[in-house]
Amino acid sequence: MMACLNLHLGVVWIFSIVVISFAANCNNKQVENNSGRCCDLCLPGEYMKEICSDSQKRVCVPCEKGYYSKGYTPNPCVQCSTCEHDYEGNSDCTPTTNAACKCRPGFLCSNDVCSNCLQQQCSKGEQLKRHGQIDYRYTCEPCPDNTYSDTNDGKCKTLTQCSEIGMMIEFAGNKTHNAICHIFVKAGDPTRDPTKVVLTVGFFTIAITFLIFLIHAYIKNINRKRKDKKCHAANRVMMSPAGSHECSLSKEESGGQSIHQAESSDDDSAALSLKHITVC
Image 1: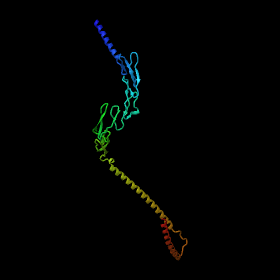
Image 2: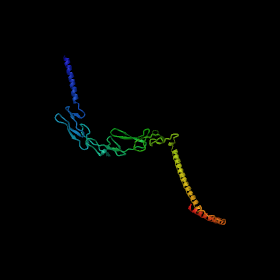
Image 3: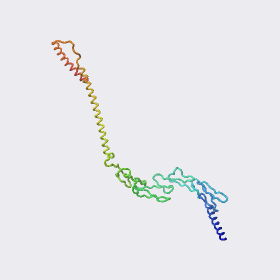
Image 4: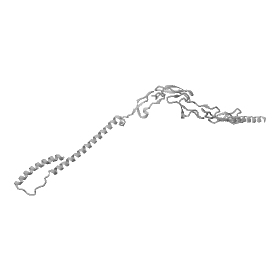
């Protein structure tokens, strides 16, 4: 009976110790004081001047200018970084964030917060490689396979793969120059042959020009024939006799009239010919 009672008391004692130990554990926004009590930490942008006790609460004070605190921590505020070149967003620091620094083009960050900058270039065909976690240093290394660098910025770019864009390789490329591609022409495909395209366009241009010339010549010939037809019609009207004699003449008068008409006809023919020339 006594053994069972002792066993029960032992279990209760162990359970009490476990409960007390769990109760003494503080969360990530608390800190334990000397008496084992959990005290709340100060908000971001503040620091704890005095920790809590059994008789008073914690005392928090805002960070001074040029210092920041970005989380719940019992540590004092941290001094803001000073940027050697430029600030991101034109802001050097806030009570809850450190200054964000950046280097000017052509310079590299010398540490993890980029507070200092250095200038280093690589030759064409090389790339920059950074070493270190907090403080950085750089070395130049050859570009990996299928990449190139045609500048001194230390950045390698991927070579153009001509086959992937449906073209043929004219120059495969190297560490300092990109590949050069040209149009892939399939056998029996005249639409992809530049020479055949030029000849085809030239043939159609000549054919259209010749057709326009033929149409112009045909219209000109039609107009000329119409003009000649009008001239012949006018000539026939002018050369027809003015009228016939109603009375018959004697043989002598007829002969004399015939001679006179013949002479008149010759004169009229000459006049008509001259007029024909003048009109047409």
